Amino acid sequence: MSGWKELEDFAGRWRLAREIEDFAAGHVVRFSGEALFAPEEGGALALTEEGTLTLPGATPLKASRRYLWRAGQGGAIEVLFADGRPFHVIAPGAKPEAEHLCPPDHYRVAYDFTGWPDWRAVWRVRGPRKDYRMQSLYRRG
Image (cartoon, rainbow, N blue to C red; front, side, top):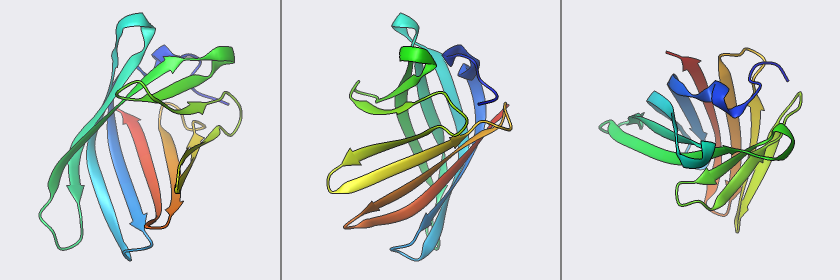
């Protein structure tokens, strides 16, 4: 793995561009905005993403989401939902990947930190009513 060495390397503001290829609906959704990793009690970082979601043929919408990132065992990063429930773990290594099972849906992510400080997360989500690929690019700024 190249790039980040510890959780604190993510602290601060990032420009965020996201593309969601919805195979079930047959269209592409785009999100453009900002990601802020802000310190929380106990050394965690609160990740807040805010921006504009653009769907084909629709008025752009304001969108946001929030997660908690905290240092885990052996250099891993634990990603939690905003309410503290576990989401997934980013394990150190050359190709960090993780998954989250939320029956009946299956979420799989691959992180790429090789262009640090730019980095990306690519999600592949499948379920009875879900079938999409979501790619997010984070750049300092």
